[in-house]
Figure 1 (spheres, rainbow, N blue to C red):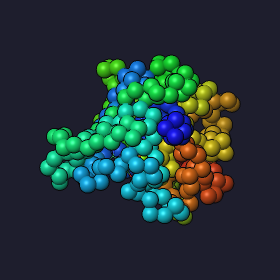
Figure 2: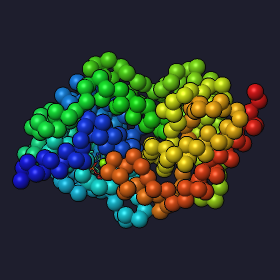
Figure 3: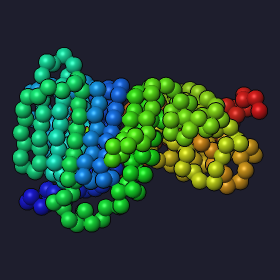
Figure 4: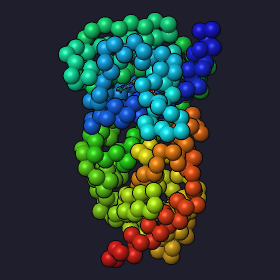
Length: 319
Ligand code: ADP
Ligand code: MG
């Protein structure tokens, strides 16, 4: 049974990247304005996410690592938080050692939870307001999982890219990523343009223009690059839906590129960071376990909106 549980946990969190994504989502759901990530050995030896969000009150702490325990879900039809399955902390406590220190600002003492397999303990500690989650020895008891892990350097690269997307879509926060004790990415509160500077450098940030568009219940905002800043790869096209970075559906990628029309040389792609807000009932975050893909209710309407918004933004920009 223990093995079966570990395998199930390894499906929720199959690599350090998954754990980081889940912990970032938890920090955002907790309303944090500062989020810091530390990695050692690509996250397998240690990964830590510290936030200054709402924390968990002492009486609720023992519930946090229970499978399917969530404080968030009101209805599956209308998900307004990034997390809602209540499986992430559980999975991390099965696939590795979970340590969580947490304190709501209004509570004097903090709680420290240690959870690993069936062993769960909670004690009182002193800690700053917010939550720090540390996962160590991920998959150390799951040799089959451990064997399929990517080398640390490539996991770090992907986690850095993931965190870059969070920065781009949540630029009003403080962000910091350090890898084996060295700072890798940092961002001070700003807007989408300053986030582009933090992630891609100041030169890129100087070459973006703003997009803002509202149509019916859809609201689109963000930045896109002037036509001269383009590249063959499409890895700098970013979309979030209600705050969640999602992989850009091909139809929408095409719509954005079409919006540039002849301004974009064939085969080239722009840099863009677009944030889409729409009613929660029009989004189904449940389609993919990693929540990387969301089912959008009306993709063709959305494609039309994107294309128009891009064309209009470029048209109104002096060359
Ligand atoms: P979910 O996010 O799907 O609810 P998780 O396993 O990720 O499930 O977290 C379980 C619960 O623990 C959350 O519902 C939330 O109440 C609490 N929690 C987890 N992380 C944090 C955090 N960083 N700050 C405040 N509460 C948290
Ligand atoms: Mg969660």
